Image (spheres, rainbow, N blue to C red):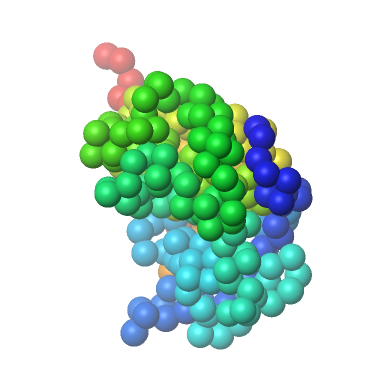
Length: 258
């Protein structure tokens, strides 16, 4: 895909949190968490609602700061002065997409590139390349979010995260609100994109099957602490404790044919 020369990227960002704790009032979101993500790796953070998964992403982006501990970007502590530079290097996608309803699809995609000084032709070309990658029909770029289906809006949110060819992608339940058929299609497309990117990818999901599809490394978090860090097979066949077993077994399966 063609992007301006100043948008060319490296092989990913290495992230880490060291002894990170975060509380919201009396609620402990993270409890002395140690976790690292190698540059170019794909990792899925899994766990029940409220386990602390999304808080990890917010710390890595500088949207939140730990009460104790530190966040490292490429081995260096993240400081407030570095946040804007970091966010230009990271694509961040949330559930429901977070699109601006008063902007067209192209207008939503153009927000960061315009800030980076891209011209209109380059923005349009990049948007059309991503639309083709996401299998979106012609004309979508000139529509408003309300004129798009749920699946199209989520594809647009993913495109916005990819517009500047980021060094890393952080995805927070990116497919959670979609119907099963669209979700399955986007899972396939996202996995292909992850493989093509060669960048650091961290995806948050409560769906174990989705996590195993996206990533070889799964990190199961409970009450702000890591319960188990390994492959799907590790969690299934060598659970660290009873909670891991219950989490794996709780994934609903279709009933057997009668």
